[in-house]
Each structure stands twice: as structure tokens, then as C-alpha cells.
Image (cartoon, rainbow, N blue to C red; front, side):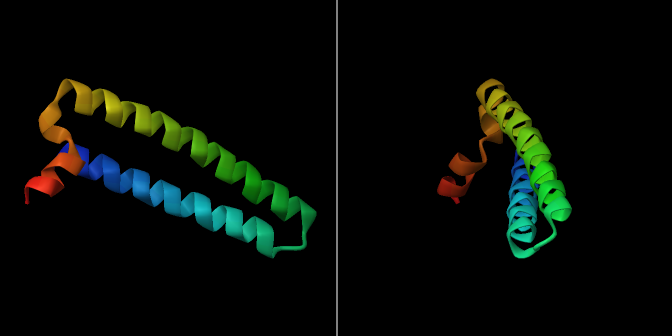
Length: 74
């Protein structure tokens, strides 16, 4: 498994966690918990954005790591 594949998997996991946290915030009536879940989701969104930037950089420097193109060739 290439670093590109692993980074995309990590990004997908982060996006899933963000969705879960946002869902938790909507499902609870506790205002403190809502704020906490929303804050955690925002923090993970910032991390995901940074990871996306890194993925774009790596794929620009090393085209063989482009996961999307690899999937099309298979």
C-alpha cells in the first residue's frame, strides 16, 4: 500500500469522524456537549484541510501516488 493510499484512507477516516461528531452535536440536548462536539469537529476539519494540502502537494511532486489515477488504471 502506497503512502498516497494510506493518506487518502486517513482523510476518509477523519471525514467520517467529523460527520459523527456533527451528528452527536445535533442529537444531544446538552448545550455544553453540543459545543464540545462542534469544537472537536472544527478541529478535525482543520486537520483534514492540512492533510488535503499535503496530499495535493505529494501528488503534484510524485504523480505515482495519485490514488484516483491508479484506481482508473486497474
